[in-house]
Length: 79
Image (tube, rainbow, N blue to C red):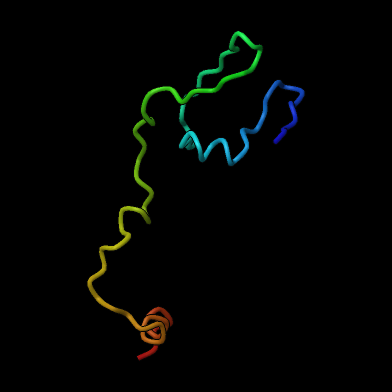
């Protein structure tokens, strides 16, 4: 897999590599060149603390089983 270097010296790490290293936005990475001249990338430490996504925080918390029609009627102000 290949990627293109920008004029600012930046690259996009391919998704397959990001997934394999469990990289997410804000993660630090370390680059090295081994004795064979190959570039090696390592994830550095733990992911920085980040505020939970507002939807992540609410996911799975509802204890009411809404039917779609009932929810849409409520949101539309019907009934």
